[in-house]
Length: 397
Ligand code: GDP
Ligand code: MN
Image (cartoon, rainbow, N blue to C red):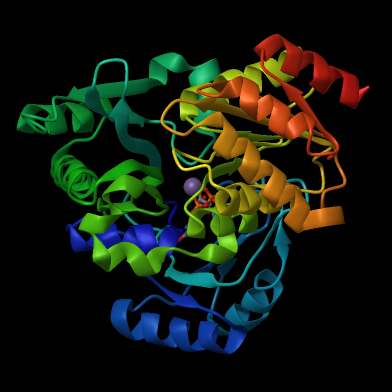
């Protein structure tokens, strides 16, 4: 589950990580109220108005603006709330901004220049360890840093059974060139950040930039946080963080129906049982010259009701030009799946306007094929993987 910046900062704060403080607002009037409250809490006179969407690069897209005084807050919030914000991480049409974070200005002048670092905590699947990745080159696109100046990116690997060792936190501060008060602050920052990552069952905490203020405080200016969906049951306190407005509506509906569905960009809808077979089926579609419109695992119980729900969900995607059903009958018998498909098709009548190719293999595959061939419906049946691929090619051309 992806979080908004303000939600990520709430979690960070709860584990003692210093953050750029802010208050979220749904409309310009609330934004002004938030700014006044923030001044009471922090003394700040300048504010940053930050669009809250599930995508980074907001600054470059015009979604992060500095308000040099209370009077600037209302017009800026008015501009940003409701806009379609386009960033390198949104779809080309952008994402609608529903709320803004009114944050304190932390780039105030002082005894030294503020400086920006990059830091993330994530899982290194290759080593099976957690990893802190960090760089002196904060505030910019980390992919560009990795490409042009890879020697400026450092990593600390952490054995999850042992945890972050104090010398590792000091190593981070050292590699970032910090001394004195800033070094102590960084050690504290890294230690609490790692604690937050582990305790919240996150799969990513990315802080870009981590800021050293002009008076040597270290704080998180931004927060990209991804929580592991499989651990959410352990964190009822985070359930309310889900923002369905940010998610693909078809995926939301599929999830509610208990289907494992991921929307993709292609033109061939897939209905498959088992994740591995689904991946192989997507390869098959590519090979046949198509592109998968989705990943859909109907799971072990492919009865008529489930098949019908899956059809309806696949058909919500206007790009779908054909549907390939690829089911292996192991526990579930192919003839029952075939009956499910026939029933679903009959129920849906002319809602199905695209050709359907059905490949059933396993228990009672022959009976299943007969059932489909004799149904009188416009469904192409196949038993072999290659036959199915050829039929996909045929209907696409
Ligand atoms: P992103 O563009 O989505 O990554 O959003 P960020 O939260 O990282 O903000 C983008 C940029 O806005 C930062 O890199 C800073 O340069 C700038 N910014 C953020 N907070 C402040 C602030 O308090 N004062 C000033 N002057 N600039 C800020
Ligand atoms: Mn950022």
